[in-house]
Image (cartoon, rainbow, N blue to C red; front, side, top):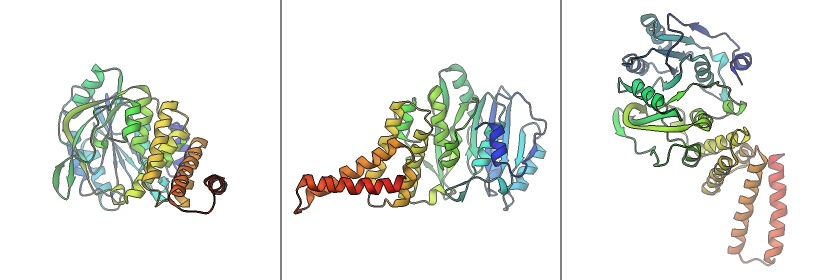
Length: 350
């Protein structure tokens, strides 16, 4: 899906664009997505505007039709900094829903497609940067390391007004390859990332995943390595988003669904797909008592995943047989369970 197809499909009401007098040849495009961030957006913008660089950068400020005053603040900043801020005023009519819930996906994609920079950095409107040399350091890294497509760094967490060490998202020792990312999951915080701008053409599956950042990093990591700067240069705010309010099962189901969508794109190697299948199987094992027809139906979107589900339930059923004293012979029970499981999974996946 390129920008032409994207706009044709999702731009039901034309976005109001104000490009101001921003340079058309920036080295970095900073993409900010904001909605209902009246208490945070000024801190976010100020932390980006104070960046000290030896290159030009643009700020793409996507405002998603907030009703709390965020929109007015964004318009004020665009007027005050016409040489830096390109303002995109969005409409709720264009909002892309995922799982029936409104999201910031249209806003995010519009920013990415509109970026003119050689590199792209991202910061949500409720996060902020803490090092005025952040952009310079990341550009220097990518300029000096041509084999790297992504660069990220350490962040602090902000919870209830208190800055904390990030002991939640641990950066693994092995973090540079796409297989590392597939095995370990998303260890890249959004306000820390910078990546090389590419010919962005997102598969349709991208708009179905509620974990757009991880999906994006997986797509990018096909063409290069992932670099890490061990310096704290941004703050990620905990508890202010929809994701923070979900149960462990809901979060892990959506993660497993993202793995399934990545497999469905047919854009990854067999090795990567096998890692993603293993991650799905691990989810099934951990939450087998909470699985229902709806969640199973969500996951069974490719033949390889259907086979994984079938084998998982078969193995689980066989383990239960060994624990029980039944009149039927073991072989008879296995045959009976296979028939029942086949009918059940067939009804789910048809």
